[in-house]
Image 1 (cartoon, rainbow, N blue to C red):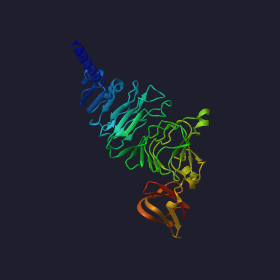
Image 2: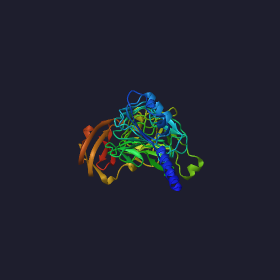
Image 3: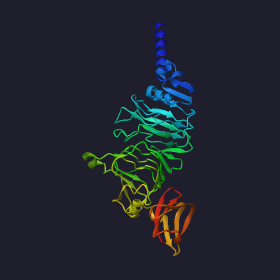
Image 4: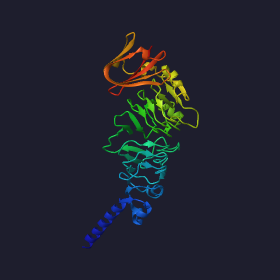
Length: 394
């Protein structure tokens, strides 16, 4: 009997310890302070916190300074919040978690202010266990400055902050560790920019048309990093304050190429504000030989150090020549494709977009009278997401 009582007592203690290890608390914040709505026991033991209602600045401060390091999950999904204020979760984590931390962002979220998701950790060279996963249920929000990370070069080759779309998100998808629009044309978020292997690494998959704002802001970059030929626009501060990790003698011999940013697009992508903002020398960018003149005249690019891609000629960067044939009919060009053309974008010599025409046909006719100056560049988008650039003379 005594043994049975002892066993029951031990089992009860085990259950109590389990309950203490994982405690869920739900609280509605509406005018009162979050700190005042939690009991001392909840403050000491909560690991999963669900908040509804709205939060004031002091509530965010209490969350990040007193609770966040202990939480496994913070559920804001049903909170009445459309903007995270500056520094909302800007903190340093000290306690690793087996599966990292997860924050369910509000369904109503529309804007993330400066440093709002800028989570750091004490494990400066290893973020394992410190990952903070922000789950997005709706459209990707607009962004302030340094939303995901600050300018600490020691840790920013890999972000502690991760953004992932929720299961069932209608607007975004998770693809190879990155967040893209559902159709794959917009790259919203990338958690890492450090590549130890391979001569060239792509910053977005082929078929991406837009690199979204802040995508690589403040990150440590390594190797030869390629902006694919399909990209035609880059958002605000996408490469602001990037820092290059120069290879050591060991790394240079074994795997790491000299660091550089390579833009494969024949026509300079349109740039948002402060895309390549830096407090040092202008960013060096390598572009196709035939397009150097376009980049040197294009807004946002002409301030950079434009160099020729040394490993390939512009012709090598185009698609399979079997995909498209160009026939000069005297007064017009006929572009004939073996697969459907979905879109045709025309650019002047200076890189200015002249027209953007949606198409769904295998044949496109362009009159020579539409060509300004000696020639124009035409970017052809195919229905399968691939593209090709042709140069048409007047």
